[in-house]
Length: 163
Image (cartoon, rainbow, N blue to C red; front, side):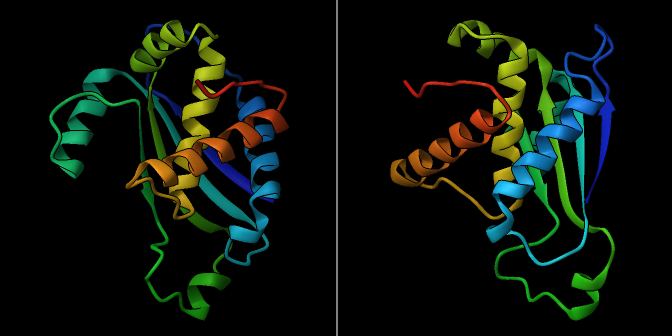
């Protein structure tokens, strides 16, 4: 079971992806990622769709990089953080928040020659992997993460080819 809180703060358009589609995607992704998830009967994720100005503020505040970025992920469960029985018993288990800039996503979609929906799915899957402890400090780990994103998108009917 999944609880997802979607906040569309991007005022210039109606939602690109409907809330029920987001829920379906996250449900399928979590099924695939079950071996990497802490045991829980349900999970909670926050998704915020915003613009470059807001994501730049967050990037500067939390990553000391005063520039827009495409996606930020704030994991609630750290890899090396000991998880208590009480934490794991909490229902739903809060995994964290994903923030995506629609401005940056639109530019990247154009560069990659695919739809904004595809780019949003790509970035959100990337953020979800970060919530679960994935990172890419080097090219090898980045490629593994990108391959996993391709698998996640394929599961929801979106085909992406790594270039």
